[in-house]
Image (cartoon, rainbow, N blue to C red):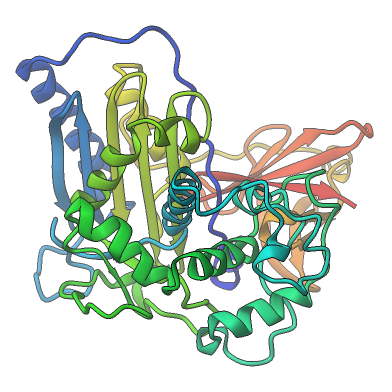
Length: 438
């Protein structure tokens, strides 16, 4: 299964834990110190088992709980080394910033989210059916990424991106379903460009970074001001060895290549926690959250309005168990039970071939560009194939959960579906991706 991770990356919308209970009282200095120790203990443990390298920021009731860098290698000359002043590429977190700009423009009377994109791109296919708000909430029907692009995507201008977007086939009738789409947000960036008469990056600098004092935030492209001083370099694991990954990849688009620091991102969170934006930007009740990432990097920003806390973590090493870390960070700040990370040593059990055969078949993962994985039973083991190549021989942890590496949390969990068969949940970096049986 590890080989899958070297082939594909998915910036994913991550769901975080729900809030329960009532608001709590303002933290005293003692409570703040107690939370600091808990957060530090948690990320120190992650760091010790080789699962975190990066910066952690947390605040509650306007008191900073933590602002600390955790390094796997203490040598300052190491490529993995970061400080609290390091600038990290934030990837899809820029979508939340774009959403904010659209809401700001609507409040100022410059735009209406209910307008169709035909107003800005008159010849866009089915553009009369696609409203701006559909782009924002991923219900436009546009695919996850641009298909059939023969040149390096990083070289495409915003106008060229729009031309390629026009050629994409809709996955469903606009407004009827939901599917995460980077293509949709390229249209959002273009709309912002048309409304402001500036590139998205320049508009962001003028409307967000400068007014909020985010002096260490900027963009790799399309920005007049050059303030990149201390870029965190991205890393991944390759055959148990930590290797550096280029921050800018040829298959990525350059429209929204934004970088920032943890403290700057906290300024942005504090701003959008105020009305009218708090209500407009919530992912769910009382939570504003966005994740981002690419090869070798993971980013999370999170604000809870009920409990009045923010947290941010920026990891320039992709081994962090992402979703669990998000959930546990929230639990710590809400004084709920959580487990301190520890090294895994998973144990396997033996299942009969008849039990294993129930899970045989091909499963399609929509959130991974319709990746198809085929499961077969060979020599009384469940094995996984991708594009005809065997990529893993799995061990059973329970009757319906299987893993490859006993030291890693990644697994496949088979769950009942409405057809009397099974779907599969692939656990990857703390995220569960759903595969539908064909």
